[in-house]
Figure 1 (cartoon, rainbow, N blue to C red):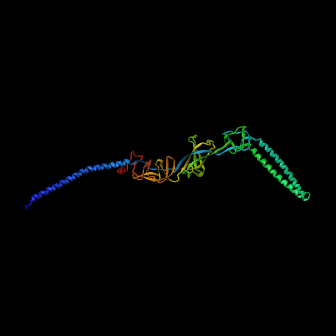
Figure 2: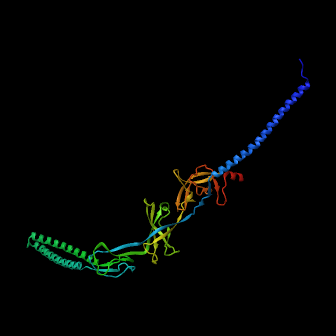
Length: 399
């Protein structure tokens, strides 16, 4: 057998080694070319995904809650009433002879307002007085006879039966005198009702009768209406959330449209001490000094209260509230994600609410959260001092 020369074996090995190197070089070049095309696409896809996520996340405006004031002014509507308000009726029948005061007149207690003519009652009184005199005469005669028989009985000049009869007659006539006297007093009272007097100091706000008009006793026809306006009662319905702070002695101020810029001082004197189940309010009475006569009854007024907050509170706008089945909540932002927090509110004036539990002063509250916001959802944060939205990724990049 023939053997291959060493020189040929060496050249053959070299040619195979070169081919392997060539293949490796080609593979490396192909890998580099492939990677050079894939990496930009991956980066572009990542950027596209980030941009899509950023655009998909809702943009929300956040702000920290404001500290509640230690005192708060509460303004509520009130109705002005006189301190004493009384309709005046007749207690006897007749015709109005004369009236002495018209509407708007200030009268004192005991002043004569009007007179009624009641001739029937006058005649009944005269008859009752005559009956009283007759009864007194009969009683005096019966008492004298009874005394005489009692003395004669000691000497057995009269019988015991006759003496007892005259004693009984004396007692009966004495009772008749008391009855006749009571009838006279009753009619004297009716005659006194012919004159109408003012029961207290006040102003006549109505006069419903005139001279010669037929007057019927009872509450069928109001003659006058008298109001005491030196002190006015102002009734205010205070919402339940403020009821604890509205206690007797609390100062208040009254404003009315006819006196712009002027305030009338007053104070709470009493409350109903019960919440109305229909309106969930507490009826409060504020007394206002009106000796100057500037205020009138029946007016509409605004009552201003200075209420002290029982505990520190935070104030947020009403649109920040979220009403769901889980209860009242607000949405805060933590690390670029929404976090739903249950809260307890106190006072609510329709524009802002007082949060008593659930929030901290440094919490960032979403001012007008979307209805679809959920716990843990990524959001684009917008703060009042910023010009545009800032994503959580951009925040990390800025850091």
